[in-house]
Each structure stands twice: as C-alpha cells, then as structure tokens.
Image (cartoon, rainbow over all chains, first blue to last red; front, side, top):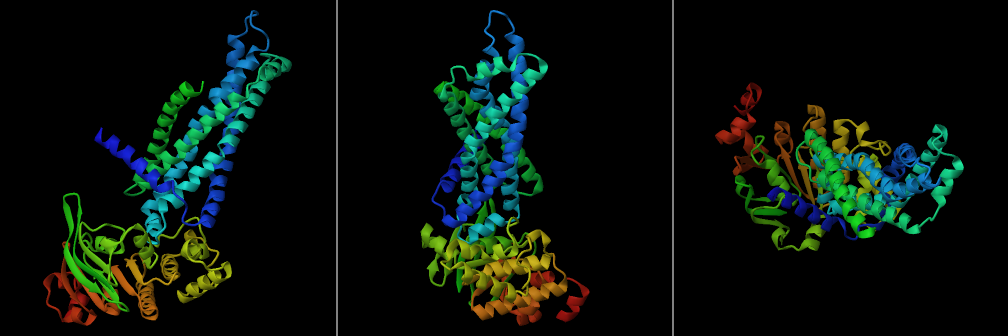
Length: 246
Length: 248
C-alpha cells in the first residue's frame, strides 16, 4: 500500500514538473513536431489495420445475432456503428496503442535515464521532465481525434467489406443502418475518451521510463510495466467515462 | 572557485560522504580520485548539484548552493558544463545539434552565431567535419570530445568531468586529458575531474583529492603524489611493479 501511494505521489509530482511553460518555445515546437510524427503518424497504420479487422468481426457477430426476421434490415449497420464509435474505436485502439506507444515512450526515456542523457539535460538547467514529456503528451493528445476518426472509418469500411464478401448482408442494408439517426454526440463521446486515453498512455509510460534506475533489464521491466499499468488505468477510466458521458 | 564545507551524503542508512571539506580553485584541473565505490562519483554529482547533499555547504564563487532559490539554482546550472562518463550525447541529434543544444535552449544568439560557435567548439576538440554524424556513428574518444564541445559551448564557469578516460585507449586518454587542461586554462574555469586513471593524475593533477571510504584521505598535487607516504593512496595509485618502481 505504501509503495502504491509513493508511486501515485511520484506520478503526480512528475506531472507537476511536466505541465509547466516550456523553457524554450522553439525547442518545444521542434520536439512537438517530432513526437507528432513518431507517436501520431506512425500509429495510424496499426490503428487502421486493427480497426478494419475489428469492424469486420463486429459485423459478423451482429449479423449472426440479429438475423431474425423480426429485426429491421438496417439493424446490423446501426448497431455496428454505435458499438464502434462508442467503444471499439477509442477503447480497443487505446489498448493497442498502449502497447505500441507506451513501450516506445518508456524504453526511450528509460534508455535516456540510464545513459545519463536526462542528467545531462538537468545539469544544463533544462527542466528535463517538461522538455521530454510535455511534447509527447501534447502530440499524442493532438493526434487523438485523428486516430479515433480514422479508426471509426476503417472499422466501418472493414465491416462493410467483410459483410458484403461473406454475404451476411447487402451493401445497401449496411450503409442504410450506418447512416440512420446519426448523433454527433457519439463522435464527441469517442473523441473525449480518446483524448483521456492518450493522456493516460503518454503520461503513465513517461513516468515509468523517466523514473527508471539501473540498467537495460530495468528499462525492459519499466517498458512492460508502462504497458500493463496504462492498460489498467485506461480500462478503469473507460468505466468512469462511460458512467459520466453516456 | 568552488568551496565545499563538511559535506555529508547519505543514501538511506548508508553514509557515502563523511564530512568532506576542500577548495577547487579556478584555472586548475582538480582531480577527485579513489577506488570504485569510494564515493568520488557521488562527490562530483553532489558538488555539481545532480545530487543533494545531506548536510554541508557548497559555495560557488561566494554563492552558497543551499541559500539559492529555484531560479538562482537554474541560473547557476547554466554556468556549469559536464562531461559524462559515456558522453551522454542525445541519440536523436547529430553532433552539431548536440553541441548547439545549450545555445538553442538558453542563449539569445542568432542561428548564424550559434553555427559559428558550434564550429569553433568542434574545431577546438579537433572534430571539424563531424557535424552531420549521429552519436551512434562515433568512436568512444570522439563521443568524449563531442561531450567536451557541448560542455564548453555556452562558456561555462565550472566544468565537471565524470571519468572522461574510461573505456579509452591510453593514447586517446592522454589527448582528452590535455584537451581538458588546455580548455581549463584558456577559459579560466574551475574544472573538477573524477578519475581513477594513473596517467591523468601524473599528467594533469594540479590539485588532487583522494577519497577513501567516503572521507577526504589525502590532498596534494601530481608532484606530491610521487613523494607522499600515505599508505592507502600509495596502495591505490602504485599497485603494480612498474608504478611501484616509479614511486621508488
């Protein structure tokens, strides 16, 4: 329990150092652009590929479950859209990115720590936590709407394509259902979740990497812990957000 | 000049530094020597502000570290250059970007002025055509020299070097030692070098502090090292037949 409290306290103390005005705006913008590339743009392919397959699986599940003639023909498209926008796109992709981005951030910062690069920043008078972590959190959060939106479209495209190919429904039925009673709040809901998840992934992983002590073995352990803890916090946040937003 | 008065440093129950008092003078190469685990790295990190002393006073040219607020500490850090054991070069940056980094963060220089200063520093450490190389493309000696260039680029008043010769061949070690000594004299800065290299002691040891079990055990210069009769120091420095003969 004491260790848990120390960890949580350490996390918030680190956030206190991170969430400050950058020492140098020019350096921050340069780092931000770099992080947008490595954390944002490089996450898009995996987010799209996984979303497409998840969308296809969701369509097959719904099509099989809702094949009863008492249901309208658009029901599969409608429920698929709802499920993807509200849960699958933000949460499942959040979990996937916790693995990809979380391990990258933790291992990068952990390696910088054990090779004294973070000490080198500190000795120069640079707020190393702010310089290294703030651009990561900002870039990943800025990319969140892009990731969620592309994920939704990929999932729907995957669902539509696979639904058509498998003969589970017609193109017209699926697209009719997808467009039915579209509520823009669903999009806001998914993006709000995505923003929170991306903050959690970037900050928890940064904390684990930044506070590494030891050597290569500890960097590996920190990377694993970053992913596991990001996933747990993300799922807990999902429950809280679902209760609040729905 | 850096004065340290009665410095103690504990890690939990373990006392690593036990009341060290000395003065590191400006324009001299001050060496901190001692066995692995004796506390010399902790001493250098404590004096440089990377570790906080448990008690005692560190005074930079009349300015007590303990009396400084956060802004003053940050300002002081900008007067410090440090060469880390492994170089601690930023992997994602080229050599030129590494050296330019302190200027980019804190100076008001134009881009052209920064480029000129980077060129000067890389020339000074004899690495004139390495601007576009990444840290992973450099040899150990080159990494150390880039680290020295980065440490001096912002005209520091204080230079700390943590085992600058570790992992280098004897010839390159001597070059690095000479370079640090020349820079210390040219810029008239206070240089503190943490080392256990015998050659460094005899080549550039203008003020040597020997740490033994966390205590300041002996103090002197490279000439006095040869003639001193401190058993622990002699056991540490003159530990093979050749050096024993030198001592005799």
